[in-house]
Image 1 (cartoon, each protein chain N blue to C red):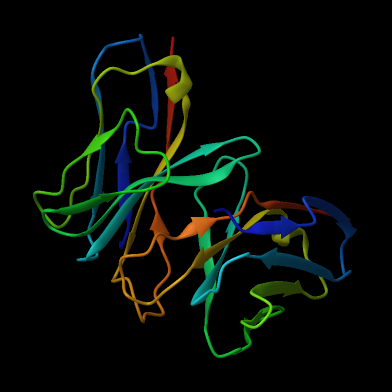
Image 2 (cartoon, chains in turn red, brown):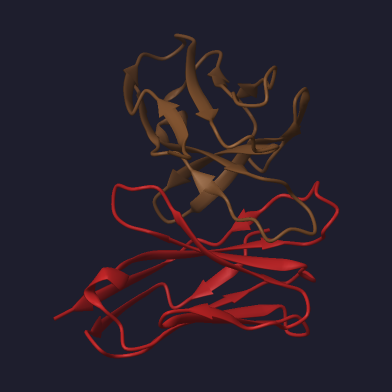
Length: 112
Length: 115
């Protein structure tokens, strides 16, 4: 069952902040985040493991609320290079035999 | 350079003509997987492999076959392609699955059109 991402699309001006959410109806072990630019392969951003750890690098960070089975990706002071489609991927266990199931994506457009 | 290499990048074929999309990684990754990407549906997993000779179905395996005879290679086989398999295909690999901090490295994609 695919995780649900919201919003489906968002348009921001350069310098504004964005939040992308990812929700699952199942208990989660981990959440992955990827960014894909048009016509290119998805690029790995970060993984959050069960334990509620918040991660980040540069102006992109994420949180994982395992009780709510939700993760949020935060992009602060957005740059033109942040444009693309963001996908979350979820895993239900750490046994190694679980599928990584992706959401349908959030299209982020940054305009000057 | 560490990478996942898919070939071909573009392929147009006719219904029923068997084809193979190759995937190779040079990172000694244990885990490999195939996804298809369709508008509005995101990335859906076709098959995955935990290691050599170990493969399992993903969410949309019908009409596809895979094999993992060597660690580096994970070809995707369409025995009798149909128009509903027209899609953008991605191969991905990861160092390992389970209790890990490893993300996926994706290939550049193969755009397949079945007419």
